[in-house]
Length: 184
Image (cartoon, rainbow, N blue to C red; front, top):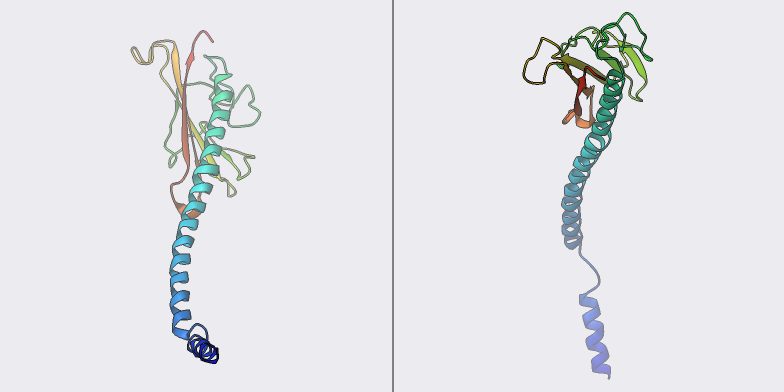
């Protein structure tokens, strides 16, 4: 029994714990693993904010403007839709014009929203607090297009983008297109 006890004591002396080298290697492996996970976390956060939050907002604001424009009469060319709520004079209504170039908005066919969706007004000069830019274009009408879309139909397009996104990666942008017939 004494011999077995001595052998057990010798084994315990040989294995007193982990060495400094073993601890350093384990810490290095842990750091490399965590660095990889942090990179994935950053990419996931970027995509979640940009495509999970900002992109749906741009679509929502494009739909809001589209609903406002489609509520106008086909021949309306005076309603001011760059103010909210729209007023019956001083604007472009559904007159052919505008453009979808966000870098060169056309006056009367652009408005600006804050980061919370609050209305900041229209005009080609962006307000300092803008976060969403909405531009729209009305194309084709009686005598303007003969085949596509057919006569008596206007195509209304609205594009919305954001000023910035997380990491300036893939700025969210949405475009909504609808047709407005002259009988409605």
